[in-house]
Length: 245
Image 1 (cartoon, rainbow, N blue to C red):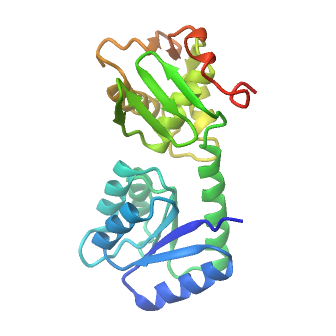
Image 2 (cartoon, helix red, strand yellow):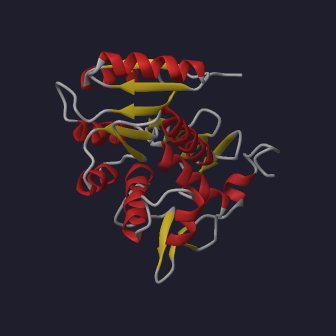
């Protein structure tokens, strides 16, 4: 069984050792960092990191700002682990992109349960399609999470990639914002507002549409939500047998 990779970030070496030892006993592959710069470098070098445990008090970069930077580059689940216990700090943490927030001192068993919950949520975002899909001038390698537009590789976040595949699976159907939210963010309250869905759709459009102001693929259905406006035959023949299940 492949080990899930976890990045632990804290400027306290004792906490790093304790967390690393416990996580390894639980079967995780653990990498550690004590500065924000190390975090960004590790995320570049370890492409398979599946969860980040992030302390907010780092010597070089504020943890909240680091969370924003990570979220701009990746949708890896983030658990903030910090002594900041005010409601305002918790709300800010979620607004900055955290998936969970745990206050120090903490019980490792609780952290372990939260890690498992975050990993389950992350797994639910992985697309259930397989193979290569061609959609207009887009070519989508589902297995490798890669998208090309006119032969140029474009970078989508995990959520953007999942959102694109969700539209493809439901081509020709008008999808409400609530349907989209429940499908892609089933177990989290971070994306309850319709505006959050609009922002994700707009980001996706900016990467795949020729003209964002006049989208041709993901169109707005007034009073309802969004729809992939393309005939299924355009791409269904490119799906593997597994993808059509």
